[in-house]
Image (tube, rainbow, N blue to C red):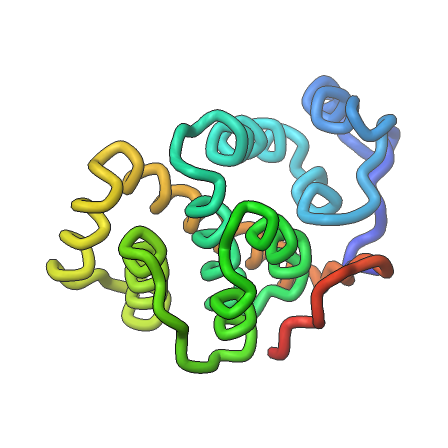
Length: 185
């Protein structure tokens, strides 16, 4: 159970019910878990946030392997077990090696990586540790991905940092069924 109860339609002010209905339509009118169970407390914000999340997750053209690696690197940096649990299996399916995923989870030295994987991990890690990205790290990522994809990867990591903030601050619990070891935090 998160720190806030599940929001029901009758609890939402009238002017936000259309947004509530749109956001909850796919789940039958209520959201009981995940980041949506928190963001629905502000239905209009949840609706607007959903458009960006949807674009970054399903409409961009960068490889799924890189997308999932960026998400789990962010989850690790933010110590977010929920995002980790949701995306480590997807990263494995997308082709991120078990060795890299396990090393990220355990904060062990990283195995050798392809240039695009190293660019993502170095870019994210440097930013989350120092809140800046050096010119060398930025240029390596730019060379790998180009301006559009680097912009979208940056937005993806920022979006998942925000998601982690919601999940961690509101103490959203992990689902009972999971395939990954719990992220040590």
